[in-house]
Image (cartoon, rainbow, N blue to C red; front, side):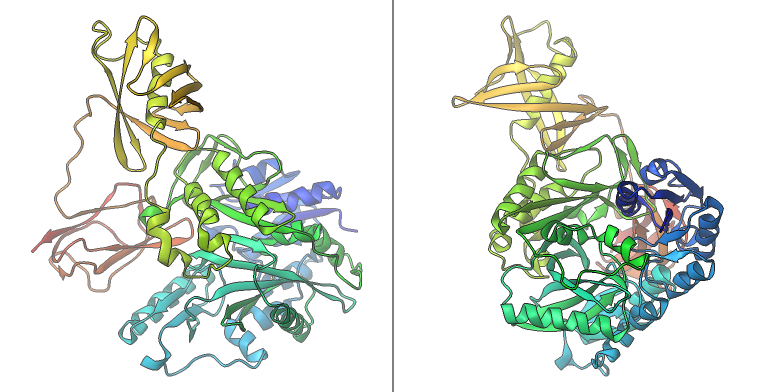
Length: 614
């Protein structure tokens, strides 16, 4: 019997595994980088071991250090989580060689499926070679790893070499393996996967399908189970292919077989030899705990001959600290509060007051809703996210709500091009028009009506300014002998934490939370602006400022001061929170200043370069 488990991962992943271990009476051990010294997963574990450094390469990707930590902490088993070393056969062997239980598939199975090219060969599928115009569009893809790293869509043959170079560089950085391959890129396909679970006694379960078509940068955003609208015969084919892939490598434990479905045909993508981020929707539908089953399989127990029966529908949304309207730029800062209504499962690695740093993934949490029907589950999740308290940096919460309510999604007609088609509409600012007024009245209550320039002239309005979704809003209201008033609105209640406004006979309540200049009014995030802005540092026209904190990973070849550049030309690349961001020339002209070099750490607003327009 397993008595103590070290989770070779961090954040939400480690917290998720710890929860099941605690319920099973198993002692937990965390590992943490210096950047994660106060992270939730390190705080909730029964024991924690420091991995010196902050970058993944220094910490969570050092298998020998993690095995040493497990032995030092007295763990007798290692769970890899998902990501980092979870699909590293060498790490699995090192765990076993140390006399520890490996809660995952055999190293030989990991190796067989580790390379997407070898996995395709195993199933008789050849990669695309000698690409021609007739093959376009194609997808350049890293042979190792996942999470959208090392992937590039190529629509013009002239861009293929650059895409291969960029993908190799990103794959090498992310996985230590620069092998890439090319496969057809199927437009308007659906990303569908099958959860499998196998024991050491020859039983393999195919636990239904999941649809993960809503993706940004090849990373999943919304997932659901079962995949809607699949013909019964196609579902059976997907199950058969998944089981065949598992049996081909004598698989043991939890895994996922991924497909692209287009025109009613399934195209094998890869097999992930680990648990997936989206596993909770399968758990909800089948009424199981996949981590608990992983533990039982690792202890040698046999599965039942048939999996449990599926019930209802489940939908999961990934809440990210990012700005979808501006290139999905990751956001950092203090997460003041995170809470969802009752009845919604929330898997997270953060709690109120935690800081969101730059070193790791930008995902804050996964919210999961389960209901008897798909329509009910989607409605429940959208409503819960809309009412959730998400106080801190900007997030993709509004995008998630709008996506779940989009007609293409509610009708089950979505595909992997969903955000390519709809992102502009889904991210168009649409703040609650009464939110700035509610914030201003709340501020007035906080200050007892004594702030502002017009307190001795009650006929004059008070003026407050707020930034909402990048736009400035000005609010005017009056102090009167009977209280606060605003044109066209009746102020029913105005307190520091709650404001009630009435328009056209309808009363609306607003809950207010403030953290310095940041104010949250229901689901609207505002920033209070000063009445008399301080002079700010002026930058020369054509200045390129870092849109986020991160690391300069590379600079365009041959780029030096004095170089002539073209509008839109890539100049350098930043990496932040597992995502790579391209910085391009704003206009055609001359590069007059270059302040970036590979490996350099930058903060938001750092001057990277200046392009003087021709």
